Structures are given as C-alpha cells and as structure tokens.
Length: 113
Length: 116
Image (tube, rainbow over all chains, first blue to last red):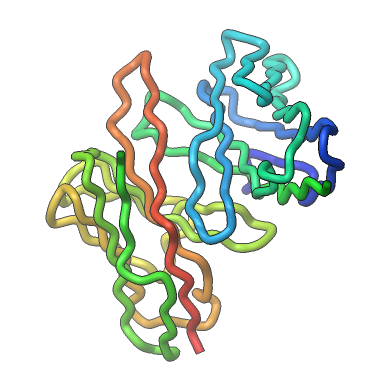
C-alpha cells in the first residue's frame, strides 16, 4: 500500500527553469513532511521539511507548498541549476511514533544547460 | 558531522547464503533504520530499532532479520539470500522524537547487494 504518491517519476528541466514535484498522502495522522535529496552514489539527505500548520515554507531556491484539505504537497525548485540534478523523495511521518517515515517513489530530476 | 557508515559498498552473494549487512552511527542516536531502495518503488522500510535489543517490523520484513546489541550498531541479516533480494540497502539513524521537535534521518551511502 503506497501511502505517499509522488509524481512525476522523472523530470527534465532547462537551466533557470522551475522544477515542480508533486506528492499526495492518505493518512491524516501524518504531521511532518520532509523532502530528501539523493545524489548518485550517496544516501538521501534532508533538503527541507514542513508541518501542516503552514501552507508554504521557503529555503533559498526551494519551496514547499502544502494543501492540507487536498492532502497534497509539492516541491518547487526555482532557477534550477545542473547541480540540482538528483533524485528527490517526498516523505511523511507521524511525529507521535518512533519517527518512522513513509517515502514516496522518488523523482529523478535532470537539469540541462 | 553525523556519520553513518555501512560495512560494504558492493556485495555479491550466492542464492541461499547467509548475508550480514552492518551499519554504525557515531552520534548516539536512539533510532536506527534499514531500507531497501528499488527503481520505481522508492525507499521501503524493512526494520527499525528504537533502542538496544528493541526492534520493530517495517513494511517489508519478510526474509530479513535484524540485530542491535549495541546502541551504535544495527545489523541486517538475510538468512537465506534470494535473487529477489538484489537491491540497494540503506541504513539510517535519528534521534528519538521529542515533541514538538522532529529529527531528520541521516543515511549511510548504501550497500548494493547482488544475489546470483
């Protein structure tokens, strides 16, 4: 059972463009939504995270938009750069548990010059 | 810097062999996790541990077991390896949740296991 659905599976964006990755969840008990970034040969690393009490969080060129009523959230990468080329995972967790995190299926982003 | 290390980057084993994957973290984290990563399926949780000698099944525990005898070390065991266990295995660790804080998971570089 896939509790966090992520799309698209792959994405090609021109340098300077906006990359958008979408996720949807089913479990209303989730209350923490992190995004992880993974470069080839490396483990994933936390990029940015949001709680459902805010609708948007921005860190540099990375923004999470959150729609609690629709149970959807998305990652926007502004002014995308070749160095952003990586696999991105959205995730969701219930902070009341042992920090067990449910991950989406991943989006492979390629930013071309 | 938090460091999570995994014993091997690449491993090739034969069907039926017993396989041990080792993970060590150096930040005194309570929680440790084992995931497998497959294309199109993302990261799926196999087992996690929230304390020494304590373990909980994740979403896909069949065919796997774990051991945590020391706080810094978490081992994944494939009792009898099969070809469908060929995958990338990732270990992670985190502090225990202390509301309202939520602590990120720190990942190791992964072990690519091939079972032939």
